[in-house]
Image (cartoon, rainbow, N blue to C red; front, side, top):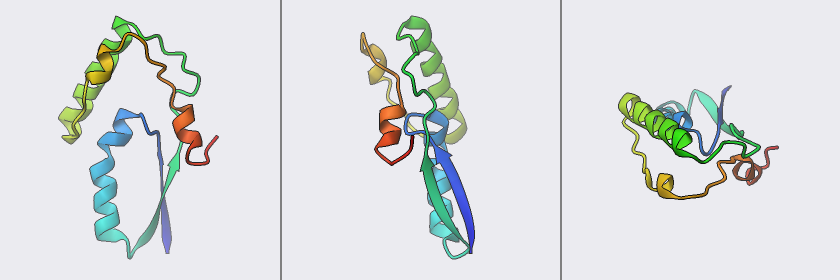
Length: 97
């Protein structure tokens, strides 16, 4: 059987946007291939400044992904004064380094 590998970042907006496609592939084509999710990290150093510019960038990105995919996003995190936008700890939960 063929294998489909999808590399995702738990905090990547486009990975989240692609969720309905992965769900459909699993539902409709599981007899044709094995699907594996591999966790990776987009921002593994936490070096993104948490300022107005970064928050605006994320908000605009999330709106673009929502417009293309229909996936919902919450902007609640953007009201925080401090946030370490680091996906590395999330990735290590799944055995990725």
